[in-house]
Length: 132
Image (cartoon, rainbow, N blue to C red; front, side):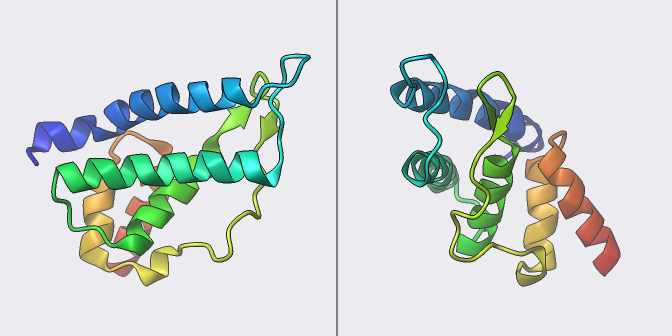
């Protein structure tokens, strides 16, 4: 993956994910137009995020393991706001949260480069610097 593609990944992923999630959220709208927030709908959102990441990484071989993909997917999930930005998704749908300390420093550096310009990269960059 070229440097230019790595820098654009966050932008491209955000656009792709927005399109996928928009369809999913519309399918879960209530009669009054709000999003039906429940564990099932939140799980569908998380699975959509995870699967989208996995598909992108499979198409472009990236040295990221399951912990890395889960971390990125969980951070994207946590950042989603619905119902006119007024509501966060259910935070405790995960059996176990992925943690930065469980991810190799080289992989963290790659994630930071891949997600450059996104808020997710900030925590990763700070962890890489802390380990250096």
